[in-house]
Length: 295
Image 1 (spheres, rainbow, N blue to C red):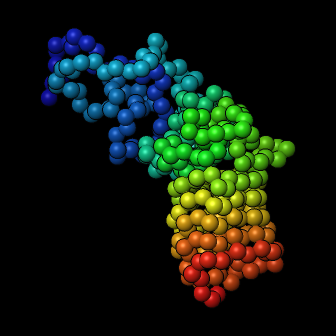
Image 2 (cartoon, helix red, strand yellow):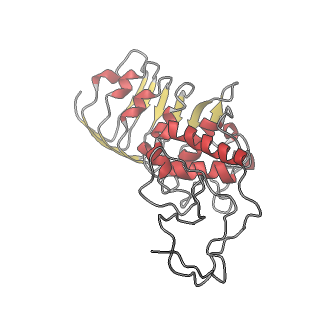
Image 3 (cartoon, rainbow, N blue to C red):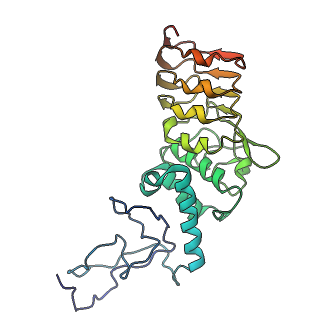
């Protein structure tokens, strides 16, 4: 099919304010509504292999048309940040526009006031905590009780503690960091968290060199406990009690040689209790109100 030689009265595509960089090692099988960071010969909202043979009846309208194209420096920044996110989460999670990982990277690229780059010391943990937020709020469609991103639906005693605010992620609600600004504790209990732990376990593992306490008690998290929990090598306390977890306890927590507290009481779990979990460091074990039997 030959492209039309008759120009349209109005341009077919108005450039967006800031196209998002989502480079992938392999092409995505699902077209994105956001233009590719690598420009094609013909601009398009959803790139096509062949030019259109029909005229547009009306122009595409964007909220903020750009007055100039993206700079090469900004393009490189976005590509490097996307590559860093892929290293944490995998290309499939970043390419899929419906995942919390994609939403988190999009926020960091376009909306985060800090405008970090991939070499920023806090990039990886800020990306991981942003992913955690989107994963536990159905990509921002649900709300937390305290310090969610939307101030109209979630109260917060200090705006600097609000998730996705411009303050350091070390200041965000329930987050504690050490003197090197590395996250050591995530304590977000009774706060309306939803979603499943496997949705953001890779991002938690990326914090394993410093993370010591993980407390998600009395929320509405569901699914099984993923085996990757055993990769949190410095974890000392794990509180997953009073949620909606099901399935068995994986054997991987036996690798947590520093673990002193393991609490999964008041869930819907079953199966046998792995004997390896009873290692010398364990001091507190809560398995109440599940359906476990034997070891």
